[in-house]
Image (cartoon, rainbow, N blue to C red):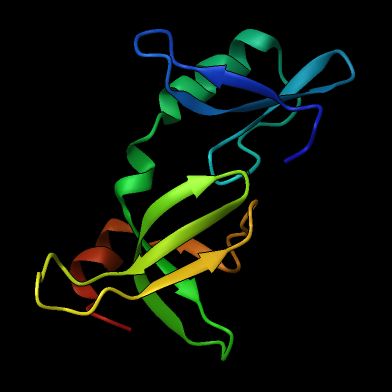
Amino acid sequence: MNPTWIEHRRLDDGEVVGWMEPVGDGFVAFDLLGRRRTDVVDWMVAEETLDSIGLAFLAEAYALRRDDGSWLRVRIAEVSTTGIRVKKDDWGDMSAPQVYYSVAFPVSEEQLRPLSREEAASIGPF
């Protein structure tokens, strides 16, 4: 994490929802995956952007590019500035093996990308 980033918490529960980086006379908003979410904007726009993104995006289905270049459908299990852990999507099958992968923070969309609603509904395990 960039040491100049300013942590942003939701007002209602104090949960961290991202960071803002001072740039010139404005700020750039970054989400919990360390991804840039705005261009340079004023403080209020950066806060509103992070508040509107919230945490819900972390519960969505994602695709993880593995070292061999193949894609695997995953769910985000843990997020911190020291790393991100994702879990192979097992659709809640309690008997399925728990398979986790670690990726660096911040993570690029070339390595971990959200599945569109259409992909998530139609694609089984990669």
